[in-house]
Length: 355
Image 1: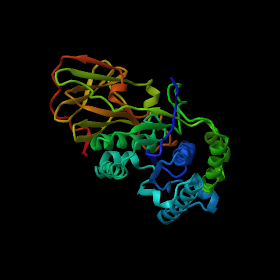
Image 2: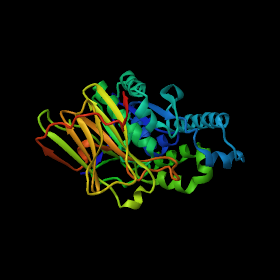
Image 3: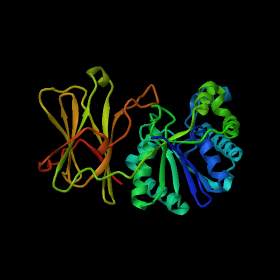
Image 4: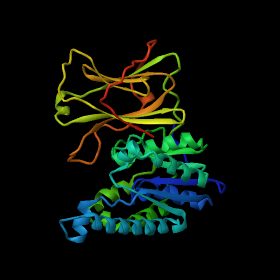
């Protein structure tokens, strides 16, 4: 069932944007709707969008882009974001820039535990009633990684807020999502805000305007349930595509949440293996999580009350930014239960990074 989204004066909307322009493309009308109702609005940008070489080459008529050029480009995109938000009715005092690395949020999720606490601090400082954030199924790697980080931060903060997930890159919205009531003036102002992102529309005006013209809709996500009980083994099966998918190297990325303990791991997949013989790739979380390779699938065996996230990651170098496989919650992966003991014994393959 499609729901119509409304706000009250007592509401507080917190928008998380991976890059400047996401706030306008995904939530330009949502922000106006909240502000018009008298609700407080704050926008937090994870990155400055500084790793954006082709528009920068086009705008600056240069081929080589180094650290100084990226920093200058990031400052430009911050200014564009502030101008766009002013058009939408949000002042600079209600805007935060975290300055995290553009196209680097997956790495931060793996290796930087302070990111979770930084997001938790932003959430607790604003005390939102509504949080808009990327969908976990968005095909841009920064979008999906930011969503995973935010879900972990929300679990730590125990914030009681309506969670609105938006998709910029990827699938079409489902019919059961939240939608905004149509309003021609709000839409016109959103188009005006998009014009402030001149660095982006210089090369991609038609594409960005098509995205901006789409009705804003949002998935409504409840907090994730634990993956398994203490006494049942949970087995997740991730099908692998035909062998040509693995001409390039892939890794299995895992983020495990066991209460307040969070652990990440990167498990390399071999390019060639004997398909008739299952192969153990890693033992994690004190032996309570095992990763195995079986014919046509990666099997993740979990024992205990552990929730988490998994992604099949194409390794660099990557010709395309966008993901083929996106992050998935454990409960969204095909699973079966078995009364099995946990697999034990360390396997020195996974690169562990406790968060």
